[in-house]
Amino acid sequence: MKKYLVEFIGTFFLVLTIGMTVIAPVVAVGFAPLAIGAALMIMVYAGGHVSGGHYNPAVTFAVWLRGRCASCDVPFYFIAQALGAMAAAFIALHLKGNPTLTPKEVNLLPALVAEFIGTFALCYVVLNVATAKATAGNSNYGLAIGFTVTVMAYALSGISGGAFNPAVAIGVMLMNLVKASNLWIYFFANFGAGALAALVFKFVNPDDK
Image (tube, rainbow, N blue to C red; front, side, top):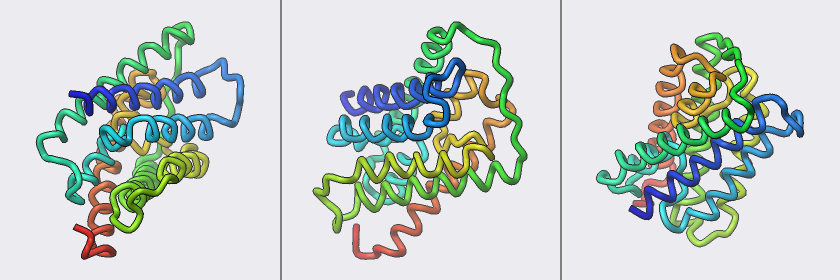
């Protein structure tokens, strides 16, 4: 139960930060990706020792395929992450005065590619800095994970919205930042990228069981 609570809390603050830094009025214009990456970094350091600090169903999927997440935990991680994102979305909208927002228009193929690339980068980094034997005990894993999201958000958010996370996709959909009809794009690309990241990790590190 503690692990699931930590996953809820971490995902909540990640999605809350997205809503508060993206929905107008925005104080630090242009710095949303930095704040979002920092929020993830902080939550990874805060909860990584309890749950692994996934806060992302695609990461959980990748870690499970890699063999470092129990099968019985996976559905509960997914539920906790989704609930955290939903709660954050409703609170962010309330704090912003329940504005009328127009969802972002995305082009299908570029959005799929952008989400796939960004999520692959994130999952690949997580697997290497937080689950590999060679990097066990390092104190920089949170920085690496947070800055991966920052870099990918700056590079790709203009194309897809920069979710790189199915739970985040649910949250931004509820905040009306993306269309509900486009939710499948994020799920397909994010989980596919998580699977590929796990396969690549296992290929590159065949002896790391």
